Length: 229
Image (cartoon, rainbow, N blue to C red; front, side):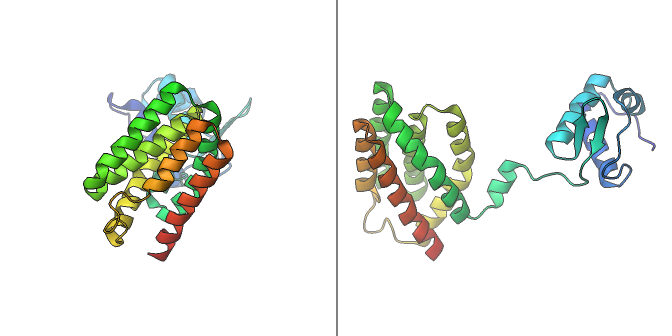
């Protein structure tokens, strides 16, 4: 194997890409043990810490795996697709199905764990959604998502909050497209007002069962419309 010495800038990125290219080219086949850190560092002209970070990145992409006491072995020649990329390519109906599983549970937890500050945030988000009824589809969708984000936040589960945030960009695009393709707001500019008000009220009252049922019904209704588009 012959590798050119790397330039100082972005050494970890360059080392990662160089090693990834060599793996893709078959320099090391699946199951093959990579040269040690010292050898790779000398070949690439970088420090061992740079090689170590590059190997971590390759492991995160599913290309290599470190085995205790044995070394680092090639496990694949093409990287796993990252989660954000997969979300961008997913159909909005797929996103909605997973969203329903995640957000219904969040609503139930929110009803059990909400604080006075959470209730105030929900009330403000509800008012913003009402004000956005006179605005365009994008602003209305943003206000709607902000309300749902406040509900997820009231569950006080950072992992759940992080997962929901991953969905937001793809969800936003899908909902704006849905409103553009249908006439949901032509006769009711504040579409979904009754259901959202009932949801906030259920969380306020601490009724986890009602909160979950209301949100499940709302999301299923939207999913049915998406499948019909």
